[in-house]
Image (cartoon, rainbow, N blue to C red; front, side, top):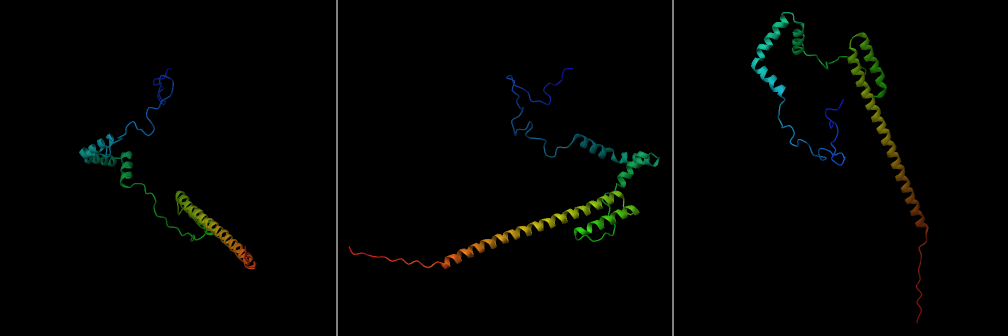
Length: 187
């Protein structure tokens, strides 16, 4: 079956068989782009419909829900009482001050999930938070150790340079001053 659009997805070739780009690099086919504030036609149509007939549509929707239309009722409940995300959780966790505290905190979260005090999703989120704390704490400790090691290396280099400079001074102090005599001969 022949292709309907032979150039679709490819650059067009010139008469000499060389592939050419339709636009130069950095040049757009629509340099002005979509105007700022331009609105989608579907959005404008919906807003017009709601402005004109919104109150009547909502009343009919509510009437259908009252008559037992399950879809209308579910939609209304979704609008009136949306799904709550990020509800506060009350749980006594041991304080997290260092990396050694993380296993006890995760064990407390798992126990709360098993007792039904937390949903599994809430347990996963809390566990991830404890793991994030653990990673951050370990990375900070690793960085501190690295900085301490660099400080020790720098201090050793400074000591070594100072010792080398001190030895050089001692060698210079032991040398006797050289005396030079000028012997002048009469011509």
